[in-house]
Length: 113
Image 1 (cartoon, rainbow, N blue to C red):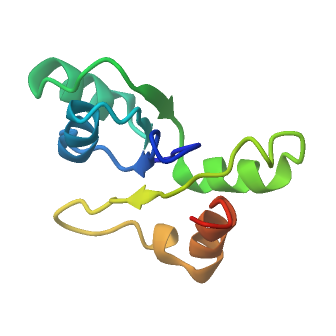
Image 2 (image 1 turned 60 degrees about the horizontal axis):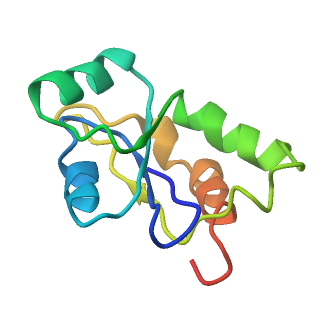
């Protein structure tokens, strides 16, 4: 999940949408980063994920890498905080826990983030 300001936190990994739904219930605008469009569709259809969010259906590795290489958006893509919740209940995607990826997330934060 990603956020451009304190009222729009980003969240990577959707699952059934519990975290984004809680944020949205408190009027916190939220950007959801999810690789699988079916997960997003099911969270919306079967688990009442509210529609008032921004969905980015993309691989988190590519999203973070693109944010680092796109200098025209570098200032616009800074976040106050990032919720990184990509656990599957089985095997976690190890590529999302590498030092390189986590440093990429850190670089996406505002100075006070």
